[in-house]
Length: 248
Image 1: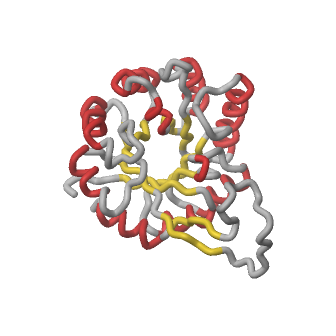
Image 2 (image 1 turned 45 degrees about the vertical axis):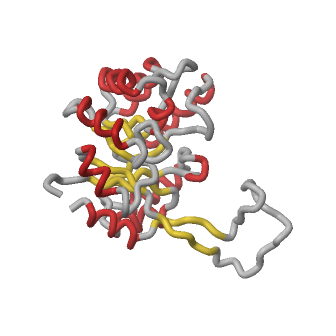
């Protein structure tokens, strides 16, 4: 690569965050429940992660799964979570809010952005559920958002590559457009070369089996039937290292 690329790794566990930094990530997006698309992690998870990492930590602010149209009570909880993240000395917060017609919720986004300062503010892939990507990007620029995470309005960034290129060009130096969504070792070089993006958002996980030797086969805890509490995914330091090397 002829330009410096910042690699952000999305994680939902402290050990995963440590692995991401060991693999060369320059920033971590810390979430809970990636199976839900990422929710706000606990204060304890944030605090311990912050103490164990030297790279920047950005925290997801999302009170539930599902859409990005929030009630008054949910928005109040998001504001409290922004304050918690600031108190725990993280570097940024990540959020996204829409109106019923698929526009960026300007009022709520502006309130969270102002409250977050001096932390960085990222608008997450709620952007991909908005009606008009061109107009939405201009709205986020107007509101002073630092970056937007997007797959180009497709399920995977590799499928939204044409729009990603257009958004990067539209943004210029006014906001960072950060491609993310299913990016792997095969798609990463093409996405970077085609879009001209300066930051990239990856996951880079592997399957991990539980250390439990006793396993009750008749019960499951809050997951879909047919799934298992005894297997999960975890950030793979070797995959992160390989992804980082592809950006250099």
